[in-house]
Length: 438
Image 1 (cartoon, rainbow, N blue to C red):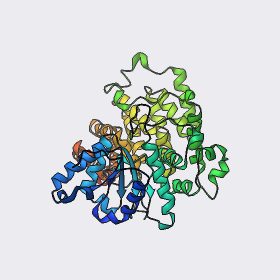
Image 2: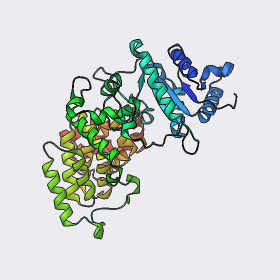
Image 3: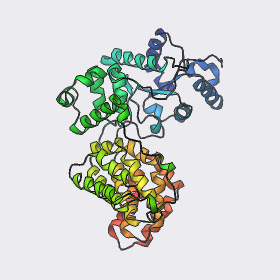
Image 4: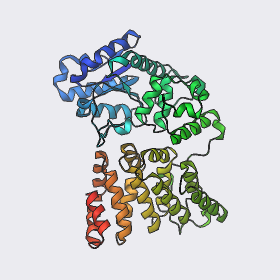
């Protein structure tokens, strides 16, 4: 293969070549160089050489465009290409070139329930399947490419590090990326694209404009967007981020906390905040209360219970809590109170409800180490039927994503569920959720 670097790598299957060929031509007419496996000639007959050449081309490119369809998701090579692009930090732009699998509700899910979902989770997919909107979507794709291929201060192009951008300078595709990071559903983001909403528009729109017939955001989604815009407009006022879960002491318990325990005043304040948010909770206030008193078991149990009740069966609330850092906060509390059965039980219950029928959150819990904490709780508190009920429910909900099934099995989760089943033969709910997990 030639060592020449291409601007863009098009990852697609042979069956989708005709659909993407016209797009590739548009991109090349805009002045960009492209690469796909048709450029390899006869070597495509050798799958091992095919993967080797694809890896070389991905390594050399600046932007990776994955052309999604059912055939693409069924391709082992395509999955390997996406993972390589993700591992090597390439800018990934997903485009839809064919129908995607439907979920139980008969709707296409984003990201698709697939092993490549972690690399697509916070990206907006450009839909090229509707001929009526094709020219608009091509302009959107070219705009994304222009931004990703624009040289940075060091001359480097195609890196995934987020670029600071003033809200008023945001173009419609930038707005779409912002909405995707806030877990706004894909169908709502499509409305922003159709109406050409820019950053200036976001600043000018009233809440009623955002909730109106054209854009149709819900009140909670408008609130999330307003808070994010406030952070972007006032970067110095941002609150300190929650430390990564891995940075917390793995062996810390409520008894070990000692001098680092939250002050009584902070505890009472957090409990008061949680009490006010039991009915119609504000995710950011709830998460802030949990984070302020991570070493206090009472606050953790109360906060996890508020989250559990808030998100049960409600996708919008699930996404709002996830966007506010709720998953990280629950896992941090479980890490800090591994010997406290009440915290473990409520933490598993909260994570289980967050993950119910939500593939993006199922993956996020896994990425943050939530499966490991739930498995550890299942092992440590097997004598409690109530705790096992919550642990196995959480494992069952997380296992609805195929990637998590493998991880749970690798963590010895199957055997631990069987142990819980054997330990509580007279506990109906425990038996029910053990069977659900299996």
